Length: 131
Image (cartoon, rainbow, N blue to C red; front, side, top):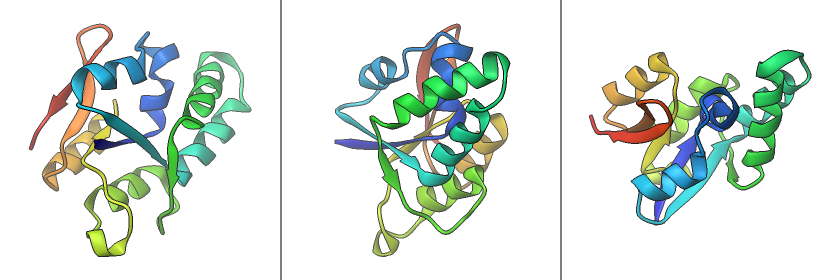
């Protein structure tokens, strides 16, 4: 089993990028177990209250988040929560094997901390990048 942490925009990819996120995770990883920070779920709920494509994408992402285990954390901002969880010591709580994100700044932060990242490659496929 490979634990993969999905951030907010990874869960919005089905609408924004025409990516079947869970199918792609199955293709890229052996036996993926998706998890999501509680802060990302809260961010999706807030974004889904708006109008337009972003709100639709967030609403779909919120529904997809229900298929993931929520992970507790100390950070309030979603990106910081992703970094906290992805880099935590196993003695501090749940750990992950990699992070799925389409956020370039977050990807760079994670790779700098030796965390493998799954992101969009091409039109609608995901690929794993190792540090």
